[in-house]
Image (tube, rainbow, N blue to C red; front, side):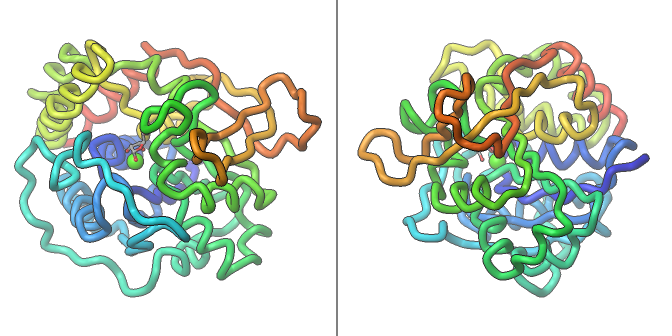
Length: 306
Ligand code: RIB
Ligand code: CA
């Protein structure tokens, strides 16, 4: 049974790899891509999404442009991680395709039907706008699998992960929507490091594999310098992998609330892992991952793209 998937993203190295993983996996059907400002400005994340689909020769997948800023806050980007283009590393040609007309928040609502899994891999601005503009979507959106947040430490402040911190109000709206959310956070993504051996296997595996190797080369530098990691967490690809094979990531049911008014902890995903608050279990949080199986899936599938 192929699972229809929509990816809302801010490409971004790991967003790009997540899109390629979805395209390379028969378990899922990528029905559409929507873009949001996050890792870079909206014009750049949109250009990058178009580039990635063209790289995989899959320009029939529609791209819809979304929000260029968070609901209430000033946009913060991550050029220190993803570079000025948002996809530094490979020299990908300018896209020859254009996004479809219409705002991502409206097109997501149009594209969502029972059975579709929404996989946001950036700030949740578009998803929150969709819920605001089209409240009826709650009746037909069964599941959101989001790369973002953390049970433990953040990566942008000590308390907050980037996607959550860029737009905490949007994250609060999504986690308060009543739609089940699976949070694939830093606690699990940092357990699976894509290293130079994975990159070398892909470098000789075709056009997409070569581009992913070059994305990893660039992405690895930040993680080596910041964390002294000998590899890079391909965060967003793990969210897609969780839809492909739900046995990879172990999750727990819990309440997740979002801090939106704190001097030190703004954007924190407050995960009540031990049910001490009595708040309703509105989410699943990733707590462990079979890192080797995830990385092997990633390399095998990307390597299978011609
Ligand atoms: O914190 C990691 C997340 O923020 C990833 O989705 C990365 O692409 C950035 O969007
Ligand atoms: Ca992302």
